[in-house]
Amino acid sequence: MLLDRLDLRGLAPTAVAGALPLPAFEEQAPSQAVAEILGQVRRDGDQALRRLTARFDGVELDDLRVPPADLEAALAAVPPELRQALEVAWERIVAYHRHQLQPETTVEVEGVVVRHLARPVGRVGVYAPGGRARYPSSVLMGVAPARVAGVEEIVLCAPPQRDGSVALETLAAAAVCGVQEVYRVGGAQAVAALAYGTESIRPVDVIVGPGNSYVAEAKRQVAGRVGIPAGFAGPSEVVVVADASVPATWAAIDVLVQAEHGPDGLAWLVTTDDQVAERVAAEVDRLVAASPRRDDLASTLARSGYAVVVDDAEAVAAVVNTVAPEHLELLVAEPQPILERVRAAGAIFVGPYAPASVGDYVAGPNHVLPTARTARFSSALRVQDFQVQLHAVEVPAEALAALGPHVVALADAEGLPAHADSVRLRLADPDRPGGE
Image 1 (cartoon, one colour):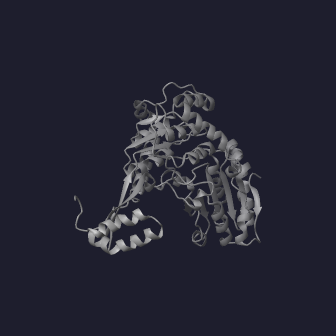
Image 2: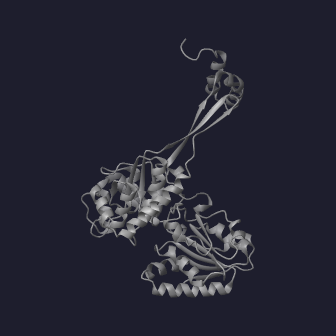
Image 3: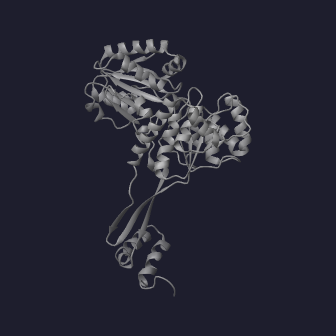
């Protein structure tokens, strides 16, 4: 069977973590190869982008930018049902992210006034994957929270197809979002261009969007120079928790949904019922054999496809919190005991009629999610990832008179006399705010 069996029954929940395999990406991250790509782009700019595009995509490019007129032409050319789906998805994603906006607040304590201010970053780069599939949904998910945050400049990078064009569906999505600046550059080289800038592509402040292991590693390496939110948005992952209350075929297809994206991902079934594990694994084999994407499915399952059998809800949660999956589905009759224990997952889908694919497209929350176990400390892409959080402090003379001695005491304790003197000077002459 394609799903390797892990029988962890009899293990205490505290021992579960040590019995689970490490993520495939953690075992062999392409660090050196990515570092070389970043170095080439940083050194040679557009010349490196063209060279690397020819090498990895098999395309010789002259102009890296997609003409803006091609975006509206793409929107007019896609089937009406796709255009409607893009527009519905865009409206729902924007509506959800508007709820994340926070008003400016003011806190006053004993005369000191502190205002919280949220300001959008200036320029954002959105990456839309290509290669094995087209991802217009990733365009919507990357752009929507940036738009809601108030970002003025948004640029899109997507890998070219064999004829040098960007996928029609991707361009149509860009048009729906109002993005005009699009470049036919993919892979780690696109991340490098967005981070460092080239002759054609100005650098950005934040880079978002999912990608393969090379894209994810490139974002990790440029983090610090630019903002890289949503943890580690790498190859796709799903953990499906199932029992006998749902058809085995439903659980099996949901295990395969994220495996469609190709190698390096993760596709797990977790159950407390050995017979459920058998039935779902058999359905996985049947569905893969009949799928037009069976090669991608089989590649993912061969590396990271598991059927895990455990004793109870506590052990299920121990598996989930260790794996910290990008997508978690709870296809069980009583999800609440598990849900209450989950603390590490990118997105959770509860019940038989909430497959992760709904979240991928139209539920509203972002589908750019942390992977490779980074959901332990990070979350889905959100509006605040495109803002800087500022605070403005106002201190009237009487408040400084009350608090100043504490500042002096702390500064003296730390051996920082200028810090202390900046307050002493003011306390010595509180009535002279300016001039001599």
